[in-house]
Structures are given as C-alpha cells and as structure tokens.
Length: 105
Length: 105
DNA sequence: CTGATCTACAACCATTTGGTTGTAGGGTAT
DNA sequence: ATACCCTACAACCAAATGGTTGTAGATCAG
Image 1 (spheres, rainbow over the protein chains, first blue to last red):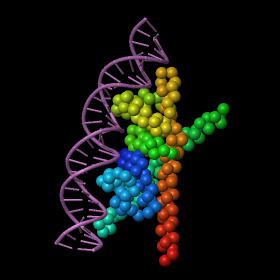
Image 2 (image 1 turned 90 degrees about the horizontal axis):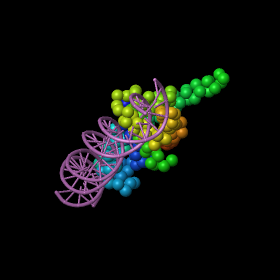
Image 3 (image 1 turned 30 degrees about the horizontal axis):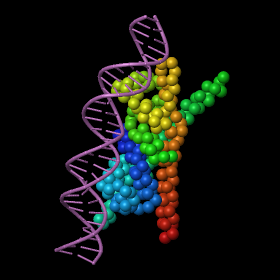
Image 4 (image 1 turned 60 degrees about the horizontal axis):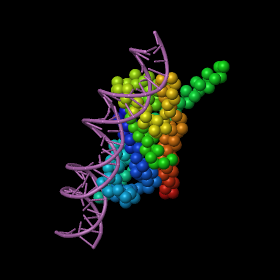
C-alpha cells in the first residue's frame, strides 16, 4: 500500500466527525443529508467530510433517486488495521528480543 | 478516550515520515539527530515530527547526555488499534445481521 | 408546471501543517 | 577554555484543512 494511500486513510480518521460518520454508516443506512442532519455544521461541511472518507476508500456512495447513500467500506478499515498490526508485531519482536537478552544473563 | 486524543493519534500516523520513525524506534534505539540523519529534510523538521508523535503519546523522549533518545510507546499504539477493532466489531455485527436477514428468507 | 429537496461545486476565510533558516543553550571532548 | 555536537525554539512561508455561503443541476411531490 502506497504512502499517499495511507496518508489519506489515517488523515480520514483524524477527525471526530468523520469517526462518528464511520460508526453510523457501519450500523445503519444514511444519505448525505441524513448524516448532515446529525451535526450542527452545514450540509456542505458534512459533504466534504464524506468526500474525505471516500477518497480514503473508507466509504462508498451509491445514487438512489435524488439521494446519495453512504456505505462503509470494509477493505479500507482492514488496511488501516493491518498497518497497526504490523507495528504491533515489530514491537512484540523487540519485546521478545529484550526478554531473550534478559534470559541469557 | 477523548476526541482530541484520537485526533492527535491518527493525525500522527497520517504522515509517511512519522510512520517510518515509528517503525525505526520499534526496532532500534535512536536519538533525534540519529533519526534526522535518515531523512533528507532538516533536523528541525524531524524534531517537529518527533514532537507530533510525542504529543500523540506514540513516542517518549529520554535525555541521555546531550542526546535525546526516542522510544516507541506501546500504549499509544494499542489505543489506536483498539479503536479500529471497535469499528471492525460494528461492521461484523452488521454483517451478522445481514446474514440473519438472508437466512430468514 | 411549480416548488421543495438532495446533491455538487466554487469561492472565500481562518487555522493548522510541514517545511525552512536562524539563534541560543547545554553537554562533551580535546 | 574552546570548539563542536545535540537539542530547543522562534519566525517565516506555502499548502492543506475545516468551516462558511452561494449558485446551479437533478429528482420527487402536488
């Protein structure tokens, strides 16, 4: 996975409104204006947040009549999780090495 | 975990240089200038990246002589991972409900 | 057809971000 | 003592971010 892709992924998570949107679309079905109704900010602001999530491949939009339905995208989530798992693995390896060193004494 | 805390956490991951630093300090021991030597950018720029990681509690600094040793902080990582796990759980719940609905037919 | 609703997008604004250079202070070594 | 590293921090700059308002195109209801 490219750097730019990961930048977009984590950048997308770095905002409370967007994290909330991710929770919502994980549970139910929301149009952009349906989401917009949940927050005090303008419709356009919510639209931009959805666009950020979309560019990060965390969400897809599907046109239904005049509405645009926002759906969570599992793959995006998994990519982010996999990266953090990788860091965890590095950490555990190191912890293992330290344990080995201590054991040698 | 507060919104601001999560903002800082994911924001910290949203930069390739900082992700690289996280990998490095997971494996070995680096001073700020030791890290700085790895990148083409200025020392001050690397210093700022480390500061961002520090504010996100992903890294700690420890003074040793005139150097400042940068160490990865396991807790920060785990917090980020836990949040993504939460989203995963929401997603799986929903996938389960969909499966249930399909099974009912 | 008309009016209301949903969306897209542009233009604008303030703040933050990622980078630079420069200055200054604390630690080390000769 | 003095010269050399390592770090901290300020000031500055360009670009991105998160928000706004306004305009315009589809689509639906009456």
